[in-house]
Image (cartoon, rainbow, N blue to C red; front, side):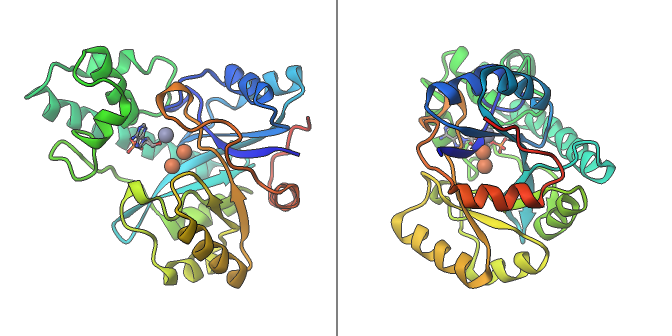
Length: 280
Ligand code: AMP
Ligand code: ZN
Ligand code: FE
Ligand code: FE
């Protein structure tokens, strides 16, 4: 069983529509893929239809934007009830904050570069959630940078003067909201070298006590030393260990299936989730 539990469609900042993402997962030899768009379940219906038609297993999830003591933490949320009012309200408020934040960043960028907010939304026609990748795509389209990576290492970096943060929920609170919605919370790329400081060791016990289910240990942004550190922490706290690609289509180098999750772990996630896994 080849299981990849983290992939984005164009419902957020991936470049493939949900149907194409599921088809690509099948072509990549995956038995199961998870659709985990940032702060939205807008891609679920199309992905589910494609999964049933193409015989690809599907885990419906999302990746919530949260903050832990001033640092950005991405929280994967698997198999929640998408109609849970508490979860839906949090996601809607983060999406709204993200729009204002992209507008602010574009206003600042426009003082120095040829870019408008319309250029950005033109790159996000199917997106329910706006993010920096849409700004990157507009900068590429306008000939300012060669690719997303150049934009992210310069004007879109988190220490760039053009960068703006956005309002989102605290990580421990998000874990409670996810659990209340029947979702299974897993910290995404907890030690991603490119996203800023690591979560400190003592963060994990508190998040586990708040109801955290697992850690995404196997991810391309983790060094071998970080994989070892996170595996030790997960074992000590009884947390599940997942692995995934964090595929975004053509915008990032991540390839479907480059990291995988053990079938036993998927079974444990399925047993805790409110929405069923679509079988392959
Ligand atoms: P945002 O959530 O709007 O702050 O944007 C962060 C998103 O940008 C994440 O989903 C990342 O996967 C993506 N991202 C971060 N760095 C890069 C990069 N160097 N190239 C392409 N995408 C990136
Ligand atoms: Zn993304
Ligand atoms: Fe992420
Ligand atoms: Fe992601």
